[in-house]
Length: 421
Picture 1: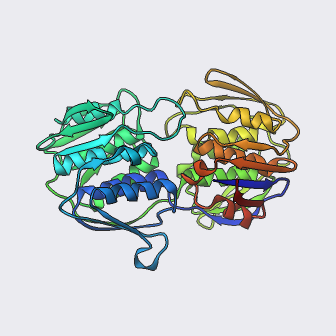
Picture 2: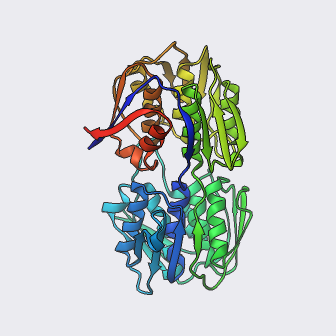
Picture 3: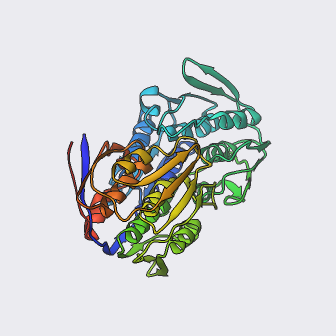
């Protein structure tokens, strides 16, 4: 098991490029199941979750290979006619996004057997909206021995309103509805950029999806789809993490491929904290402030402040010149990084879904343990600012969502390395 070792106190300077978005790549890979033939995806990040999705596709009989066409960032998926529509427990338990194969399998093969998902321990993340939506489209759903079993000769278009906003639920039903008979209207749909990106891919395949990026998505069902080539959009959460790293260290960093429209809520808070941010050269430049100002944050579904950036911003606020309030509305158990930050000298008090962050003059390096994906990134960021050495353990969480983060930070001047724990 690896750990990340950081010697803090260095300003980050230079340029760094953002990898493809994990949360876009996973549903796109799952959408391959909708069309027989060879799909080619570029700018696919080399992450543990992406590898898991490729293994999952392989267990069903689809051939998934990285490095196609001599590009390390390319993944080719060849879907055969003889797909086995089952997603086994041993893979699904490691990654919640595995449930994204459910919609495509039912839509194209008429049946699916998918293990109930696992993933990060950041609170209850049920898939009841996925199942209710599929039932609305005509699927018969049974839960048996830890598996979802779904059947339908052919799905039928229908209107469905999500009781709560769910990104993977929206994506699953979008994919299922592409091959349904008739029109499907999804209301209270997730508006995240990754949903828009999936819609682009589906439309390239011959689907008729409109309204993605708004809270009403309409899908006109078609009889078949064709394979596609596509370059995955840049990862907005990685971009945001790198911008925070620049602000936190008083640095000057150009984050290439960062998309301002995907980061508006994050940029607003960084500017309020004193960072100077400008769009240039196909990316965003962040110059960190001499003194960080306190800022209140409330996580919300897109276009609000993303829950996936909450832990990183909390690190910034932990060394601000006053007190900040962070309210988490998306997941009920996403303050697990607070105890570890406290070990490094942060002054944070949690009451339910609200954390009061009182800025301190500085953090001190310490051995800490990552509890989930974004918490691991926050601890690496804290190490960049802290005096002395920080060791972040359980970085397999980090590897689920960040492609070689330590290499990118080292390129910017950080004293950071990976070592055996």
